[in-house]
Amino acid sequence: MEGIRLVEEALAAGLVFRGAVVSTTLARTARGGELREELEQRGVPVEEVSERTFAQLADTETPQGIVAVVQSRKWTVAEFGTAPGGALLVVDGVQDPGNVGTLIRTAHALGAAGTVVLRGTADVHAPKTMRSAMGATFRHPVVAMDDNAFITWARKAGVTLWATAADGAPIERALRELRSDSPAGPVAVIVGNEGAGIRPALNAISARRVAIPLAQGAESLNVAVAAGILLYQVMHVR
Image (tube, rainbow, N blue to C red; front, side, top):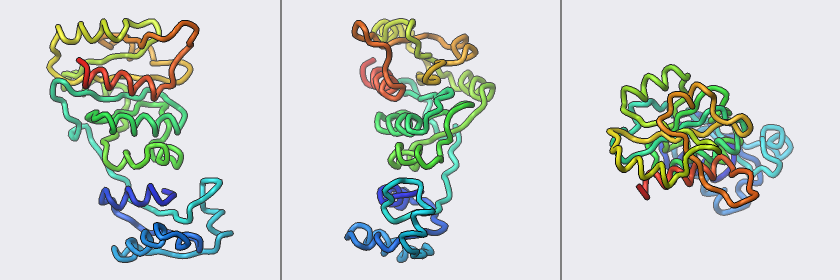
């Protein structure tokens, strides 16, 4: 991972650090100097290199002077809460790493029990995904699953599936129906690929296809914005 904020978040979350590389510019700010000091106090191996060498390691155009190797946290579905009234996010084939990171950050901020990433979705540990998630990946359970494993688990856990679709039922109607149904488990909001949407197999097994009404002439919402609206509605309005 790269950047002061991400490294700070990983430290705060208690992740295991394997080592860090810093440039000579890191200590030019008080925050950077304090971060290096904290890493060294925790026994993390820190190697300083020249700005030129660091630029070859960095993924960003304007690096902040630190890259760290951290052991990723292994989440499982057992860490998802499956109580009534909760929500999950399911990401089906969203390919843009920035969108995937923002989806994870949004799900975490709104209190979703976890996020499932299905095939075709951008790597949750890719540099851009991690930066967009802003540390949410360290605290919010994110589990990669294949379709069959997800469907089997969702049925056993009593999860109600909602597929987002432009031609779906308006969210207000879906919420009214949800209140009357009183499902035994959480609602999983499924968002799909930026262009193709949700795959037919998932649409077919979803209890509802839901839509966010848009102003006349508006084509669509960004996938992370749509997910945020729907998760909030499911968790805080119903």
